[in-house]
Length: 69
Image 1 (cartoon, one colour):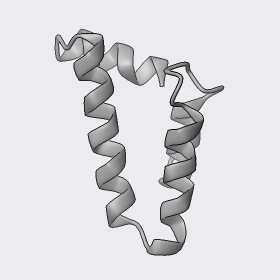
Image 2 (image 1 turned 120 degrees about the vertical axis):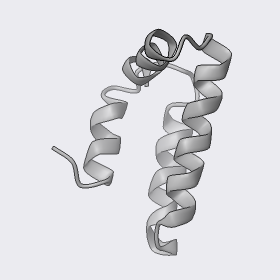
Image 3 (image 1 turned 45 degrees about the vertical axis):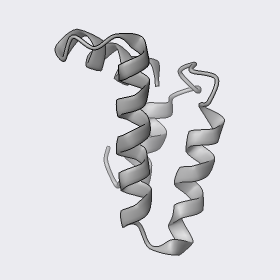
Image 4 (image 1 turned 180 degrees about the vertical axis):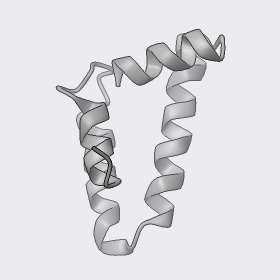
């Protein structure tokens, strides 16, 4: 999630801690809105990126999960 974190920090003038929290809140919101059978995918996605790294294309994974390009 490095790219998303960087954008939040630059465009919203957030520090790293607040940027991480914003990402956590948004992913939690998305997870709650998904059907129960898909919520595990978001939880796994969040766990896979818990080290704060880019997660090997974490943004692309999220786009795919949400039907984006």
